[in-house]
Amino acid sequence: MKKLLLILPLFLFAFTSKYTPDLNNAVKNLSCSQTLHKKVFDICYSCSKKEPNAVAYMLTKKMETAYRYSRKGLYFHTDYSLPRNCRAYSNDYTHSGYDRGHHAPNAAFAYNRSIQKQTFLMSNISPQAKWLNRRYWAKVERLARYLAIKYGKAEVITGNCGSKGHLRENVNIPAYWYKIIYIPKTDKMLAFLAPNTNAGMKTAKIKKYQVSVDKIKNVCGF
Image 1 (cartoon, one colour):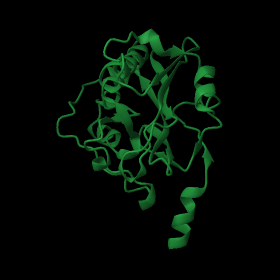
Image 2 (spheres, rainbow, N blue to C red):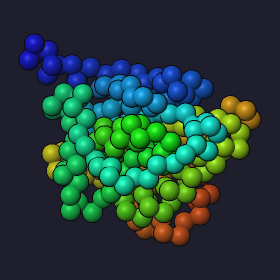
Image 3 (tube, rainbow, N blue to C red):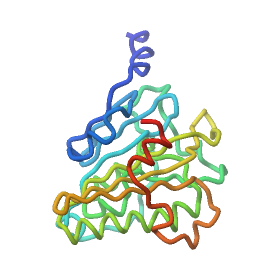
Image 4 (spheres, rainbow, N blue to C red):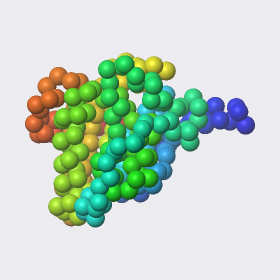
C-alpha cells in the first residue's frame, strides 16, 4: 500500500471541471497529478510543484449578491487529502516575500463560511508577488464578480505557469498568473496573463495584461 501511495502522484490526468464546461476545451491538455473536487471548485494540482496548475469555478449573480461573511478568523491550512509528499504548508511561505495567492478567491465565495474555509486550503494557493496579489489581481477578481452579477453567470479558470525558483520544501514560484473568464450569456471570453512581479502592479490598469487565450496557451505551453 505504501508503495502504491508513492506511485499514484506520478500519474497525470487531463483536467476537466464540471464548473467550467465551456472552458474545458481551452485547457484540455492541462495535466494534473491530482484532481481535487471541492464544494464549488475543482483543483488541477501538481505534486511536483506543490501548488495548483489551475482552479476552475463558476460565479453566479445569486452567489455574488448574497450576504457576505468577512475573512476574519480564517487561516491557511494544509490539505490533508493530498499524499504527504504533495502537500504544501503555510509556513513554507513565511518570510519568503510572496503572498499566499488564492486561485479560487475567498471574496468570490464569501456567501458561505464552509466554502470560504476551503479557499484557504494550501492546495488552492500559489506564491504571488505582494502587489500583484493586492492590487492588479484584486481588480481582475472584482471584474469576474461584476460580470457574474451583470450577466447572471461566469465560468472562471485561474492558473499559473513557469518558474522563478522555489520556496521552502520545493514549492514552485510561478513566473506567470492567468485568469480566463467566460460569459455564457454573451458567448464572450476575457483572458489575463500577468508576470508574477511587484513591478508596476500598484498602478497597472486592468487592460495592461489582458490577452487572448492563445497567448496564454503559447506562454504556458498547454
